[in-house]
Figure 1 (spheres, rainbow, N blue to C red):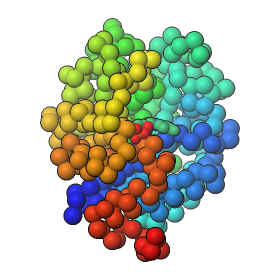
Figure 2: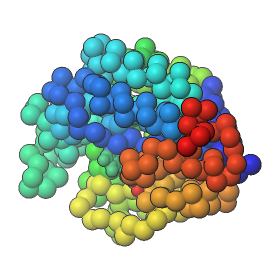
Figure 3: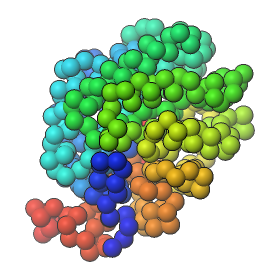
Length: 333
Ligand SMILES: Cc1cc2nc3c(=O)[nH]c(=O)nc-3n(C[C@H](O)[C@H](O)[C@H](O)COP(=O)(O)O)c2cc1C
């Protein structure tokens, strides 16, 4: 049996295989941030597809924390209840489901103001200038994440992923590009408060994950030493796994090619005993299998491939003759 089709356990969550659908914004909610039939069909289809772990798209902890006013939200009980219906269906179909909790910071384009940031500079000319958070404002952000985590628990999610990547609020706080005057431990203070607040309401036996931008793809950005220190710090704070992404703090784009982010996962695994999810432009059975077989990560994420092909896992299972990873209803296909 190929390892990619074997279970993986983090805390009380047992995944049936190592394939992860990473969070991907659908920009399909109305202003109320409620999940609708699009979201329900989208996520349950990947559960029929036997994806081990499905992570619901960036879901805002507050109205101004949305990237757009079409993002999902989790700042009220109606939003929680719509999400709960998706959670229940996905779990009944045998997949595990997490949610990415998000604050977009200065990369918000929501009509709700002000947009908060650790800087008073707009991201670029397409964005408006944010209101700079003082340290005494951090508890307000941490509290929004805590309330969201409480609702995520009530909705029945198996995992929380805190969005600490792609230049959104927590990510811009960490990067030296935004705050070159501060050392890493200072830049981590906002994320620290958010994690501590979430941990007060999220049960110890359920996994807590952070998505990070492991590199800014610039010499003056996050260094490899920073990455190792960041991962160690997350482990010390009780974070169970890292979803390894990159970029987004500045407009510098990565030199992207299949697997381009996997070496960051390897660096983390070489230095810290912690579960990682790696990916980026992975679109074939061979590429996904290689990453897991060679222990470069514990799980592999496939984003755009799973948008094109929700039944990637069925094809993987047929290739390696694993019958029970293809639903009986579809075996004659
Ligand atoms: C339509 C779309 C929406 C995305 N939305 C999110 C998001 O909500 N949160 C996030 O962390 N990454 C988001 N991403 C990035 C993906 O999770 C993933 O890291 C990226 O697409 C690279 O993986 P891939 O090459 O397998 O698609 C998005 C990507 C796409 C294509």
